[in-house]
Image 1 (spheres, one colour):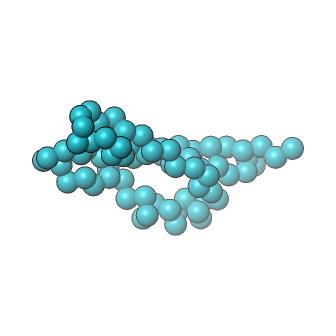
Image 2: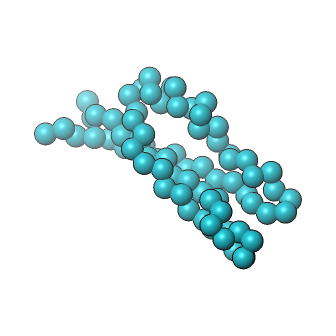
Length: 71
């Protein structure tokens, strides 16, 4: 039976009037190295921790879930 190991990378950003809306990690730049290490992206979970009517539905946090076969 195949066994897996998992890696979760958390990304976050601030939103609001004085925010630049940029993520704290450059996932696009990280993906080639993760792929070389055998990690496969299986899910991205978007969350919102912002309050207020203007921020409704805005993504402020993402969890990137990867897996690879356990050796």
